[in-house]
Length: 433
Image (cartoon, rainbow, N blue to C red):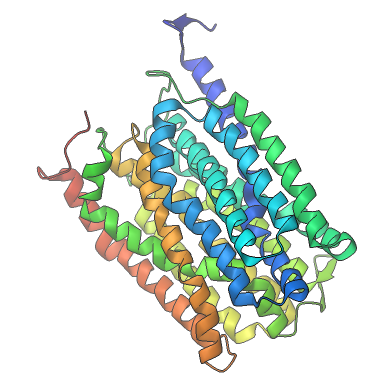
């Protein structure tokens, strides 16, 4: 039987409501996935039409990621204050406008403006849905954040082939226009059902595993910025994010440079050109890794899971460099790289909220999420390093692999001891008012 007290649902109603909120958030994330993960399909067609150069075109990708990430702290504050419904709805309109502008962009300036608009919209949607999941699921924080982030990681998997076919048949302009309108409209409609939990509505049924450390306090944004563990996480986020963003933005050019992009590959009875196969598998694995490693971290601890995932990512990146000339191994190893990378979008928000509380969860993770924007600044440098090393990807891959291995060690040797000391020390950040 369901009752209400002062408009607040009881335990059974709250449990039902939070799963619906999780689903609504996932749908919104799926609809914006192509803004990042579908971008690589458009780089070469744009360059073939306007001859701006891949490096100049990829600046748009960097602008998108920067505006998607660096504005999230402000957007997160507004989301924490006013709730996700109207802000996410309006952002659905923004992402539609961005891709429609891409369809008509005849100058780099307009392409960059569209990227900024899309980044602002995507940032609100990303921050709003992940923050909402963190608030609704204090007992399954890693899993909930992972499932929500999975929508962003795997959401483009079903549309890789349709977008590629539309680009080939009708031009990249048509793909930008129609997919932009469709994706934005779905976000705007679904967002009308989003809401944050009311005070006292969320009841934790399952206690966190003993391996987890969770604060019972809520720390304000200013105090979080004065906390050393926050900056350790920030540096780690940049290290791991760099390799993944490089792979996301450059996978199509890499495949073309290794001459495997159009070679048919057959795996488990399915045959596709290597690049299309890789993009499809990568999106699926990049999505699955987020709830998988999020769930693992709920069981064995955040830092232990980071060590496993980041080490796997470093090994995968180096192996891809060695075997990328083989189309089958290109598909498999690129999938491994994405599988070992995408979990940062469940592990870091869960760790951040464990450490600093739920009251400002969207704002706090928004500040940490700007590390993705910092990492995006290094993506164009990949092209520079590629040119400087004689049109070779070796240096780029080796640097990315080393950064991941260092981050893996930092998780258990630096972050965990610092977090334990902070959460047990009398000098912990002040409790938010």
